[in-house]
Image 1 (cartoon, rainbow, N blue to C red):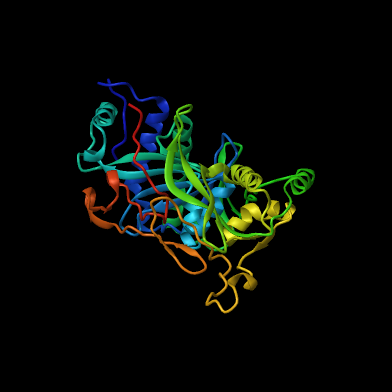
Image 2: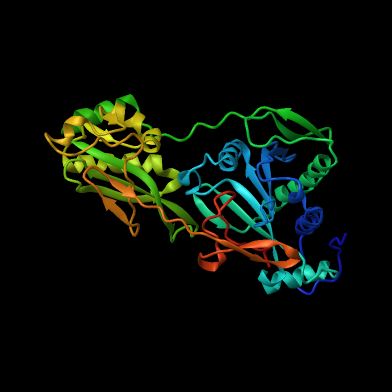
Length: 404
């Protein structure tokens, strides 16, 4: 098995953690555990530095993309479960995922600087062998290159995946396939790896818009209720925004408020998707102050209700999952809006306007596989820069290399 070895570099030398990661990647690649592990074989790996358990899924059984997805912590575990069972929807992944990704790619796809740096420590490399692409994903931002801390997490995870995969292959261990557990978790005791069976960790409570009872009472007294009915939604804007001050691009969310009777747009605002609950309520209160009153009734879909409903109720708003029948008008051919069916429209996305609602039209891109090196099948994307936009079964990836 060819392994990286040190020799005099022709470019910036690889750091010790880069060498460690490259060595672990070669062992993982040569073992090719996707031959007997599917992406719904989920297991946990404790990070000995932080004590956090991250959750591994081996990609490649379907013959498209080969590598390792490492979902981070409790939130990563529950998202991965929903992804592999098909329960996850667009909004579960639209704002990004807490995950690290290492995939196998062709040498020809790597940047020249990385190839030269690898050649210095990997003189026996084969031109047809797969090389690593590394990606760091997090809620609220676009994928980026991994840093050294993340390299260390990935190197440790790759080594443990090799050990677990060998045990499964040899019949010494079994892995849960999706389901509810208990899960195999590889932990550390006195410096030794110990495999245990553990239940799923508690799912973190999602963020909610918050307002104190005192502040809510003050706003009710100040603004009063105008008795109107509005449709409200908070949804992914399919946009990435970069601030000039910090320079880190972030995923945007869109807040939309529509008059239920006329369909007139009353308020629209873009903001950070990772902080949507906070700024959405602030913007709504500001818009209601300008209009001279808090709506009496708000129609929301289920997801939006999760984020905003408690705060709206404190403000004296009646929250509906469907439009009250009285609002349809006498004799009007209007059916109530089903719970969870309230529209979401965003700039540049086509929508249809019916008598009672707007419906977001999602257009999915399809990818097809082409032959890669080593007989691997790799996805060819219709997206820009080789980005496979339909790949929501693992993590949506932008390519990143070792720092040069």
